[in-house]
Image 1 (cartoon, rainbow, N blue to C red):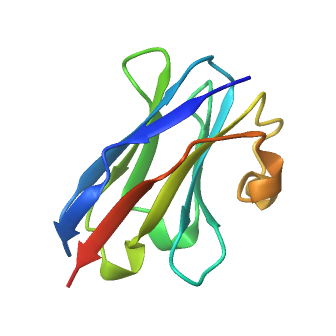
Image 2 (image 1 turned 30 degrees about the horizontal axis):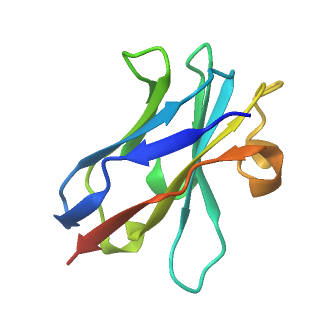
Length: 125
């Protein structure tokens, strides 16, 4: 069993930045960040594999960066130029491998076996 804990959420004004961290009890080779706004489906935001290969949903490209943390058991999501539309609960997810790094499945909730409890990000206008 892999346990994931997110941290770093909070409230920020539009244009600001936040960094989310995901700490894992056991390292796996594939991580995803998802978000869910009230009344909306959970959306894949970014993924990263153990080699650092990263992928993103179009709406965050150029603003968000996903990376392995300095600690060997963490993954980060740096979010810059935040917009009110980024307001959501953000979740970290893990899977054993990213396989051949195809976004069409890496963005899907069903691909990941392990999930954190989420952290709230609120962006005010």
